[in-house]
Amino acid sequence: MVEKSKTILYIVATPIGNLEDISLRAIRILGEVDFVLCEDTRVAKKLLAHYNISTPAISYHQHSDIKKLDYILDLLSQGKDIALVSDAGTPGISDPGGKLVQAVIARFGSEVNIESIPGPSAVTAALSISGIQTDKFIFMGFPPHKKGRQTFIHKILASEWPVVVYESKYRILRFLEELRFAVSEHNKKIESELDKENYESRIKNKADKNKKLKNINLSSVVVCRELSKMYETVYRGDIKIIIEKIKSHSNEQKGEFVVVIGK
Ligand code: SAM
Image (cartoon, rainbow, N blue to C red; front, side, top):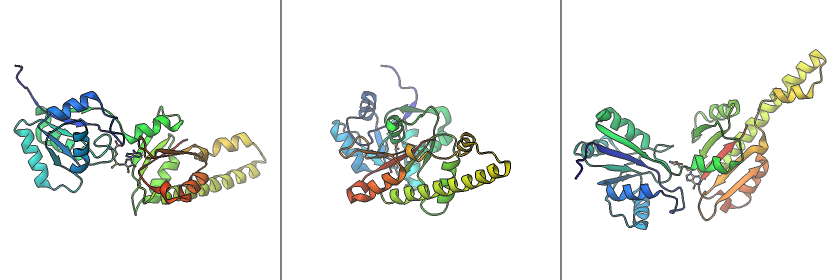
C-alpha cells in the first residue's frame, strides 16, 4: 500500500442547479474523503444522497465561529482529508470558502495540500451564454446592500471590461433600476460636456462624440435567472425592457440571478 504523504483539503465545485453538473472526479473525492464540509447540510445531503455517498457532512458557513474553525483545523492536523463544498458552484466565489482556505494556509503552510476539483460556477455559466465578448471581464460579486451601492455602480460604469454581478431576488429590480438611472445620468453628463466642446470648437463630429461616449451599451445587458434549473431564463436587450419583463410577473422575480454588463 502506498503510504499517504500529506493531508488534503479538496475544494470541490458542485452543481449550481442541475445535479448532473458535477465531475466524475468530484463524485469520487466526495466519496473518499473523511468529511465533507458544507454551508447547509440539507443542501449537501441532497447532493450526496443523489450519488449514494455516505461521507459525514459538517456545516461550515459565514456565521461559523472560531471554535468551529479550530475543530476543522484539528481534523486536518489529525490527518483527516476534507472536501469543502458550498451550496452551489465553486467554493470561495462569493461564499465563505475563501476564509477557510486562508486559515488552512496560515495554520499549516505547505503541510496540508489544498487541491481544486474544478467545475461549475454561476459567473462562468452566465458569461458563456452572454454573447458578450469575455476575453477579459471583471467579477464584482454582490452589490453592497446599503452603504456603497452608488460607488459600486459607478465602478461598473467606469470599467473598461464587461462586468459580472451576483444579485438576490430581493434586490434584482432595485439593482437594475439603479444601474439604468446611473447610466442615463452618466450619458447626459457626457453628452452635455461634448455638446459644449463641439459648440466651442464649432466642430460637429458625430464619430468623435460617439467615441467619447464611453459608457454602457444598454442593449448589452444580460440577466441570467435560475441557470441550469427548470425555470432558467435569459433576458437580453435593452435594460428598460428587461426591467419591464421582470416586473411583469412575480414568477420572473424568483430564483437566483447573475447580471452581465457588456462594454
Ligand atoms: N459559489 C457560487 C458560484 O460559484 O457561483 C456562488 C455563491 S453566491 C453565495 C450565490 C449567488 O450565485 C446567487 O445569489 C446568484 O447570484 C448566483 N447563482 C448561483 N446559482 C445560480 C443559478 N443557478 N442561476 C443564476 N445565478 C446563480
